[in-house]
Image 1 (cartoon, rainbow, N blue to C red):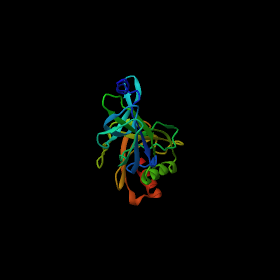
Image 2: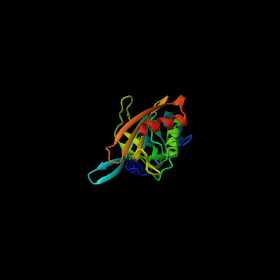
Image 3: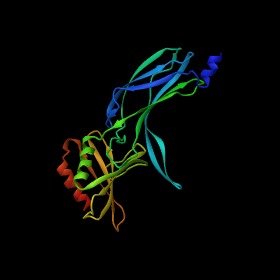
Image 4: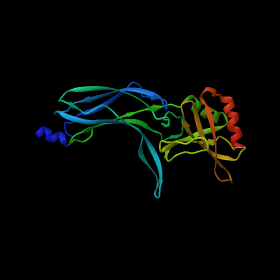
Length: 247
């Protein structure tokens, strides 16, 4: 009885650990993992097991900026089961990352982009032991080429973060409840009077949409957008296209 009471307040409870086949992924990519549940000091009923794809998003409040955790996607795994003291259960798992998963592997002066998978157990009358696994998210070829084009045009990536909200343009919109912004500034005075450019990406299966916010001197901010077909990624053509949009 004493051990059962301890387990009910989270002492000696079962623990969970998700082991990913790889932590290096791209948005929309499939991944595989093994969910390992280790029993505690007593027999326990696990009523559910959940994985969540998480990121950290920025809010603009009355007292300034602050960050909160945001669920990009959530998966329920397996059925109810019992696990005894010292017992181990291994549950195979496969899923696909949300296509709007923020990129974390960015060479920016300030990078506030983080992504991880959080795993938790639902145990009757117990606290929920959880496990966090950091992911390294890389840009797809379209995004990578767009970033290379910005450098070629004389812009430096100074900051990357993830903000609360949705993106919408004539031909696309986002769905994850947050969007990543890559903030660029010109290396020298821009012939277009541009002081700052912010890029946001909405990838799909065969194309990536780009929403571009232009901050020009003595003018209000403006928005333009473009779509990069994944089968037609070309650095030189993209540089020409961006120059026309910036003019």
